[in-house]
Amino acid sequence: MLKITRKVEYALIALGHLQQKETGQLASAKEIAEQYGIPQELLAKTLQKLAREKIIQAVKGPTGGYRISADTNTINMTRFFEILEGPVGLMDCYFDTNCIQLNSCNIRTPINRINDSIRSMLNQMTLADITT
Image 1: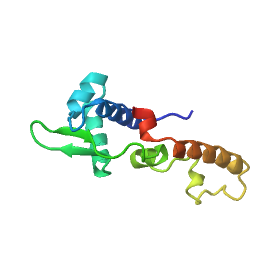
Image 2: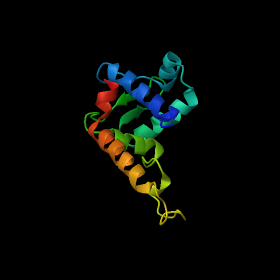
Image 3: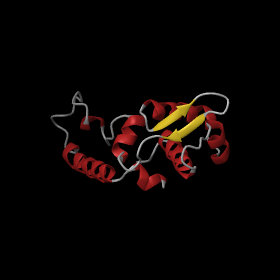
Image 4: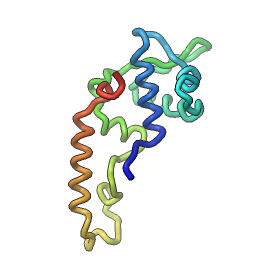
């Protein structure tokens, strides 16, 4: 079954929450976690990763928190998924050619067509499409 990981789901929820804030207003990981019932530790690590990628800005201090710092219209969903989870692929052989069945595999080509379609769709969608 194809599905979005919890990490990606929580990141999207958090970004949606941050998008609703007034410009410059901060939200803490604790605030977001409590409002949406998200494990705070996992959310904090995910937000830190997004801050390292400059999608959000982390403001330190007792009244600190996070705010959107990137234009979410310019970040496609493929890039976003890959920031959080690595390459988007249905099968490892899409990116890794070390499979011992690679030369005799009879499903690689059709699965790669599906994968290409999914990546194309995700390339056309932006974070703004999801979070606003």
